[in-house]
Length: 194
Image (cartoon, rainbow, N blue to C red; front, side, top):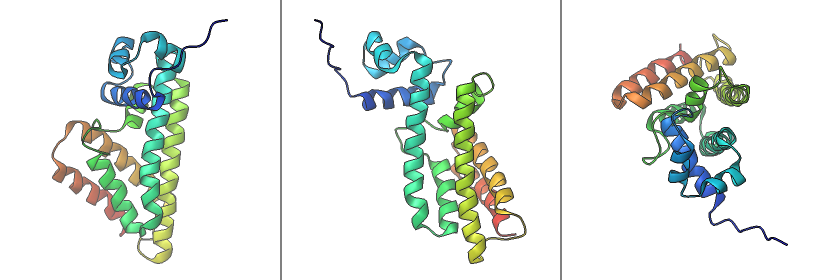
């Protein structure tokens, strides 16, 4: 009777490495060889553990989504509505940390795969809807407290802010001038007060 070989790696550690590589390079530009090299595992281990490249990409995206949701989700409930909006924009501009790629893996997936891959489209749509609802909830709370304008519905304001956040995520990949990004963010947030 053959015994299964024990994994010689931490699954989450190598998944994070794959996530960062896909985030940096995108799906199409990342080869299996790139993944094997970055993850530090054998090709067979990659297939046995994660399936094919597409399945690994979707798992890496889920890991990205969890990290982002946990990071932002832990801070928003303890903030005032204005602080929560500021934090979301700051997080978008500053990124998660120095060692992470610029931009947003969710936006990358939306641009690169959502139009041709139904699973990617579903994940992107779910993520966009989730964050738009977070914005609706924060804005509604701000409107109830009198912090934000009630001239427009929370849903309309959230759609506009979310669109601006997506644009900022694209700009963070190519624009290092943080002052400009903050000016754009301030203009976007001004709709909450007028």
